[in-house]
Amino acid sequence: MQRDERIRVAVILPSFSIGGTENMVATLAKLIDKTNFQLLVICLACPQETHIQKEIESSGVEIYYGMKGKLASWRLFFRVYRVLSQFRPELIHSNMYAYAFAVPYVMTHRVRLLHTVHNKPVNEFKEKYKRLIAYLYRREKAVPVAISHIIEKEMKELYPGLHCIERIYNPVDTQRFYTKRSQTSRQNITFINVARFMRQKNHELLLDAFAEAREKMPFIRLVLVGDGELRKTMEKKTKDLNISEAVVFAGNVSDVERYLAAADVFVLSSDYEGLPLSVLEAMAAGLPVISTNVGGVADIVTDNGILVKPGDREELADKMTELALDGAKRYQMGMCSIRNVKKYDGAEFIREYETLYLKYS
View 1 (cartoon, one colour):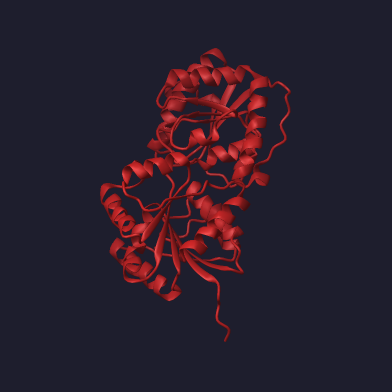
View 2: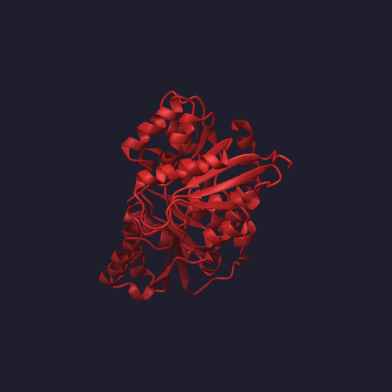
């Protein structure tokens, strides 16, 4: 029997929920050169039937699910170790806290961990996880991959003495999201936000700012795409602010490009970020962006949008008002978004990761 000469890479992540990390893994699974690389995707959670999961399944890449019913976390360590032993990876590519479940294998085999840092490093893990990965960095058993130059800078500050740090920006399928825009003025302006309902995303700030802007502009509306533990709290807040008729809670959707195509301005109110895929998708759809100046957002929001101070309701409301009233500026910034996002297309992302896989395997 002919020996498979492909480089074996195990990609591990917490779940197939909808977010930037999961989209990145889906892009890897779809576009990786399968004649040179054999991927195994290890998902710690149970199957979730999201569109992310379906994309990875249709890519032909093998998937292993760690959780099949209720399972103690220590048993999950054994399961991951067993599947890695069977697969015998030449490199493990970890995401988020899932890296910890690969540590027993990494420490007992001649294999390295390539760990993508998706979020602000100080907020990425609890302290015990930071200490563990710092140990791996010192031993050169793990190599971090930052998704923006700000993340790279913060990694160096948080983990002094790092021997090496790579940087690869998140990918976006520009063809999927492209929307032909016109300079025609619109009577009703739609703001859109795509984010999980969690404290980091600060939907409360966004709703407060929208309510303030709407006092001057009753013709604006807001579409919130996503789901999460704080959704019901935010639904109640729209009623308290008397803006519920102007806010749409779309939930998790598989066709987010349709919602972006129908919107006029993308707005993000996060307290901290890595390099949000949602902003790149909005740019690919030709939208101007208003965002809090956090994480790597300043890398991608330049002449195509406006940055505001984190937590500043008044400034966010002012900029929403500004773009709602200025159709020419919206169009100009949207065209800049389409131009600027081209360098984040999936083809370049895959080329860079294939290079890293070869370098560290």
